[in-house]
Image 1 (cartoon, rainbow, N blue to C red):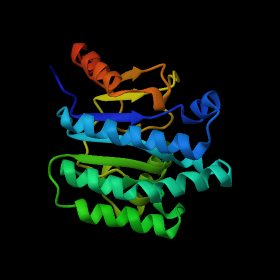
Image 2 (image 1 turned 135 degrees about the vertical axis):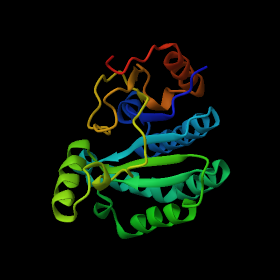
Image 3 (image 1 turned 30 degrees about the vertical axis):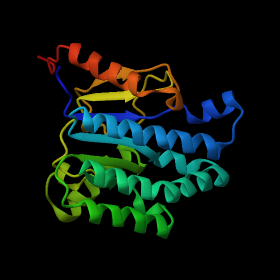
Length: 220
């Protein structure tokens, strides 16, 4: 079975799931985070080399202080689990986006896990945090004018990261929401009606099987 080299994830639908289940945001986001870690493990174990995911978009900073506080608390709580997963899988981690917008202790955690995983060679995990695709392009153009180099060399996402082969979005929404526009031009787009907390490992494998059935022509 053909395995995508780079899979992108937009784990959408957490707030709708919280309203549907009448459970608190902290509980729901905690379960969503656990589901994300399971999905990351499944993808790398399936032979995927690069996994990128929307962790916290630039637009998410417009949410209420209460909701942002819950998400920031979960980042702190789940940091150790992410470190253990990264060590288990032997993958490198890169955080891409406006990291300066996060609280100092969270930025420190981002930097710590990047440093700890720098020598790992079994795959690359790209966490899009404080990220928006249009903002990344604006940022890259400004840096290119200032420092030189190519557009790709000046982006948040490292230039060695290849284009996305398969992009998976849950919750029934059929849009990319600024997800890596420079790298998704020929991505196969898989949209699931399930909300992210309901999206299982079996659903993920179904998406990989769907990808393997596609005939990719790259515009030819």
